Image (cartoon, rainbow, N blue to C red; front, side, top):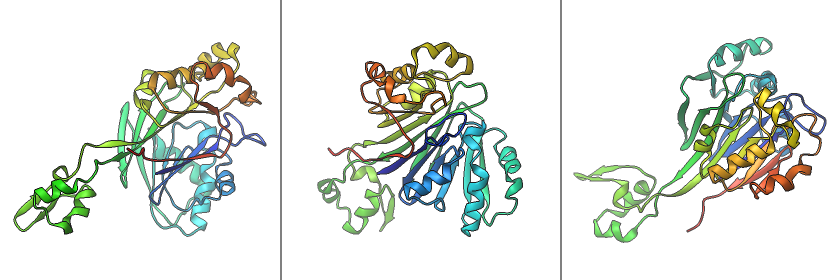
Length: 303
């Protein structure tokens, strides 16, 4: 299972009732943060979660509302005497920009490992959780992210017995390991059925609609997408500043065949996003106008 918390839903500037953009995901003791806008630490604490176990921080791009909370977060991690390294993923110049922000946090008790994205699509795996970065269309280089957790097929006891595979090796094969023992080689495909549906979460902000979003969000259990403007007369403004309207986000959700859409990254002028949901749900019914700290747990489907 994967725990998901949309820490902040605001764009451009923080508001008393809306922190800036950030998403936190927890899986198997590992924590992934996507973006770190102003107010991220406060939202994490209000949620009752901890900043210390954050292992990976992904940045969509380097506009202030997506990265301005990072220096304070690093100071908090340093004061917590963290020593484990943190991996940061983001567009080119990531290391230069983070080091510039670290002028107020020059000495930290943990190393930072930087991965700078250069291709239109790149994938990384951490403890079995696959992070897929894909380029979108903003006025600076910007990426969306899909997080995927694969699920192996069911263990077939009868197949294991018929192949005379010793029982002590069953658990290792079930975990996907290959076992070589007593002159024999045992592989997972000898005892596992076809792979089952895994879990998929897709997150993107600050972009116009693109084919890359539909491709990478396809089949997602949860699609978190920017809806900068809910008002139908703001489409031209969205095009000018390379953002999206609610209707456009819903159109992407429909095209990608996702299960659920959470709208986020609202304009400060958009006081009540829920006022525009009736029209948006006519495009994609399972749409939510998310608020700060909206949380869910994504589970594997049962057969």
